[in-house]
Length: 277
Image: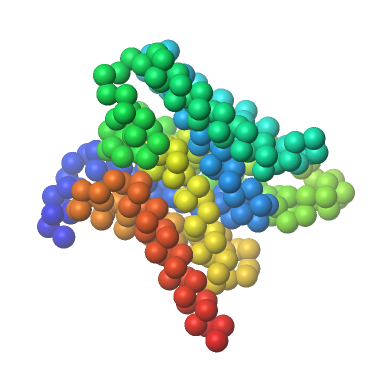
């Protein structure tokens, strides 16, 4: 405890904790929607798109990479969520195509036009978020706070509409709901959280923040509202525990949080099995 208090005196550690909690909270709320709509792997696909956009931003020597990464990820999210309307290419196939293509082109560009003397370190940090969460600037923290607040407000204010679109989009459309607009809002929120989460767990581990809290909550509760609440609490607690362990033990932040998510899901699964018997 003394060692943890000592570390918390440093601003970069406090920044990491704030950003980690906000990202975990937002990703868990959106995760419930994605899991119920069978779009669990969209986080994986978008994270690879964000990696490719980050590589392009690095090649272009952009100081604020978010300027390029966020719009590219938003456009990709809209295309992926609307893929169900066009049957020529199924949603899962489109996710795989975009995911693998973006990852390959991103790594290729970083190799061909590398501007860093430590290419392996840059790639590792982008893929697994090993140290980037501890190097956040004040402006990046405020950007995360503002974007997370917007996402949370949208989740609260549009709760009923998102609920309707999530469970029965055809019926919601039949009663006059503009499902296209709300699908667009969901896509934008997903893209924002994916871009923010890259600093926390890296592009390869983002899906864990989206999937595990939702699945853990669904093992215990059946009500949509209870699942949303428990998923949020679970995700925030696991993120804090993972970051504390990472700080004290010196392990990679992203991998530690994901490992804690896996253990937490195992505990929820065990509790559900014991209760059912």
